[in-house]
Amino acid sequence: MYRSREWIFERIRRDKRLDPTVSGRELAQRYRVSRNTVAKALVCPVPAKRKKPPPRKSVLEPVKGFIDAMLRSDLEAPSKQRHTVDRIRERLAAEHDFELAAYSTVRDYVRKRRPELVLEAKEGRRHLEGTVPQTKLPGQEAEVDFADVWLELAGQRRKCVLFTLRLSYSGKAVHRVFATASQEAFFEGHVEAFEVLGGVPSVHIRYDNLKPAVKQVLFGRSRTESARWAAFRSWYGFSAFYCTPGEQGAHEKGGVEHEGGRYRRKHLVPPPEVDSLTELNERLAAIDAAEDARHIHGRPTSIGFDFEQERGLLRPLPADSYDCGIDLTPVVHRNGRVTVRQCYYSVPAKFIGMKVRVKLRANELWIYDGRHVVACHPRLTRRYTYHDILDHYLEILLVKPGAFAGASALAQARAEGGFTKTHEAFWAAAKRKAGDREGTRMLIEVLLLHRQLPAHAVIAGMTTVLKVGSVSTDLVAIEARKAIEDSEESVLDLGNEENPGVRLDDEASSPGEAVKASEGATVISLHARRLPPDTRTSLPDMTKYDRLLAPVKNTQATRRKGTSA
Image 1 (cartoon, one colour):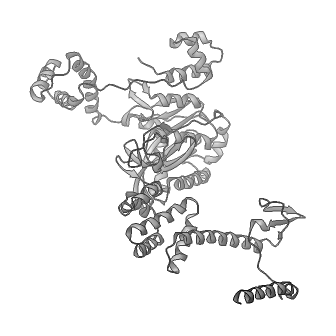
Image 2 (spheres, one colour):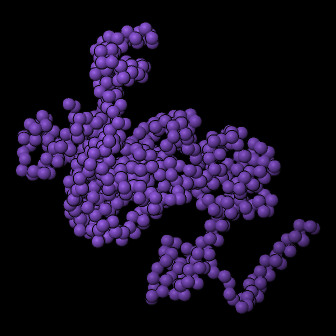
């Protein structure tokens, strides 16, 4: 049976962890690898990546559905009148004009597929067997599961998933909501749970046969794991226990099965209204901390009390966290988008035609130019959907202002609230004054100010300019900077009212020396703020200075008389 290098590395490290005296030669013989491979596994938990050839499609792909239909009809047919391999090939040729597959190809597929269909047919007629109560020891086991939840996310009803990791002894659980039950969400849920708990269960964690972890279910407890999952387990040093598929194995991790439903009914009804999943997960973290005072039915002590007993028995975390995201390098299309998992995300227009690095995470997607983040999007879950940012297209729209009104990025900015009524009013006023084309360009120039100035300041600048009946972009910039200065002054004035010990200092050594401590009082440099208001009772006497200007006035008058003569 094929075993991935990640699986071998994890097994070698597990055996060495359980028996520190085992030699490298013995581990090499046990797993039929070289001692160099054993040494590499003990040094680094993840093997070096190597390029894999692309998978080949089966020639039977177009007709697998027809073959499955024949095999399903055999389930109710007499035992001596069922399809043979030759009969299947004959029917494919006669009914579907398919003669591309060899006898051995059809035979191998039927040999593998027929038992699977038999198990599927029996699935609905089986019943649950009796269960045996279990006693869990502290710090040894945990359980993980996903549950579906509905949210009001940014004003839209969305179906997401609730990740739950629950310690079997104390019942301490960590909950996080993700957009999808992807492998990235699976990993990030583990990482956040381990950080909250402060360690990793020392024996194993129980799972059903989740797609992010299991590629193929074999006989008994054997599973073919995905390579990244084996690497993740090797990194944190824990083992996985896989439950029996279907309802037969539901009771094997009944704690987390019950916890997901209880938590959803208690804390997610009615569906919470949030602007982002980050906001929701912050709420869930606070709820998890508060639930330490809860008592599980039949236990005299609280969850938090029992967790303190097993906190010290958990395996310590590694020094570095695992990178749960996937690195991709798509090419930016002419429409300023990249394609990631059949979804489309906008990129600044200057990167059109170039390759960019994409970090795909559980709830978000980051786009890099080298080491600098140039775009950040929420992760999309439905195929062929898109997320555009209006700022990414402004350089193109300056040249093609006629495309602005129908841009999908504009529609999305309106829906998300980034393109406000003030923008709409400024655009309408600019078009009335300068025409559609030039008026739209003036709006785009104002939108470019958002890259340098806060949004509230730009909106305040537009509001002030519209009040005086102007649409000058230069005036918008000036008024926006004034709005920033006014907000800073109001903050400083508020600080003076709340802190009487604050005094002004006009002898600051440099503009950066805005705040310093002197004689127990806070000192604010005049270089870091505007001058205070003039509180003098009378103006200074300027008579002496007027006398100095008198000879200059007489000289200028004599020159004018000479010129007229």
